[in-house]
Image (cartoon, rainbow, N blue to C red; front, side, top):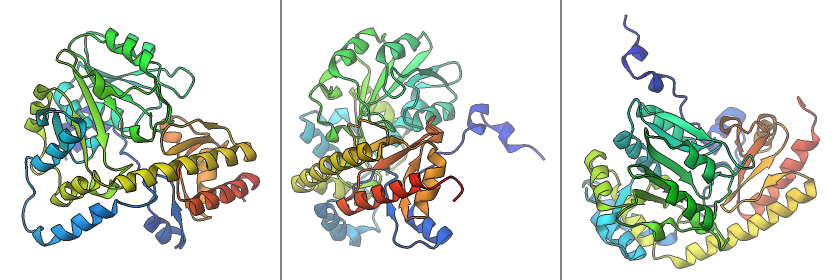
Length: 370
């Protein structure tokens, strides 16, 4: 009998699937814990935009119809929001879809993508799935992108550079001056992907909005998502901004009807829900301040974050993760990202943050194996 793995690219056969945060339902099945909190996947703790929920309810009777395959109204809304031509907008089933499509378009055996160590897990997965090779740049301090080191990794076979800003899972950012210097070093023919899934949470004035650097010369793609600030992670909706030539290529290879009808109407409604966005930012800022103060009090080292999560050094990430599960608190162990000592903790509602810190204090006080 033929070995199926011999029929695909070796890089594909070797892929370890992406491991998402554990859902509360799984914790209920495994441990019988029904009142758990999930702080593992950087979700919006307030829930979805109420306007989006109402738009979904109004559209339910049309589920027998296919969505608008061109995503026209959604793309028009996004373009209007950014004051851009609609030809520069690609609507996607989450920004991850764009990452995979870009790898499919621009990579193949013999070509490579550059990204930083300890960056979003989808970058190496998409690269391997396309048959490309990865050139991984070291971080500057163990947690932050080193754009100079990344530029040095680019060679004649580089086609893509992936940059998360803020970076997941560290929450770190690079700033405007180093970003400009990096762009000036990128040669023609290299597509720079600025993954800005968490940009709305950034309060640092030195943060570079990559949309300001699009021009007719650079091959620059900006990625945004509706999963975080808008609370629509379950609908899987995001978008890319790029030159029309890149948008056309993305449309050539995307799946038909890639954004569902419910996602389209929900996003259009949510983009006008300024009150929900403002409340989300307030809850995140207050929650981040609370967690930082509590971690200082508990003497837990953490990486200062510009997103809606914190990377905390708890000594043994897997052991602490398991202890927290038994207390009904779901966080994300970071061994898969090269941080075996760490867990990533999403900012939750005030009562969730209090439950997390109490459980964490108990977990760290409990000897291993207890």
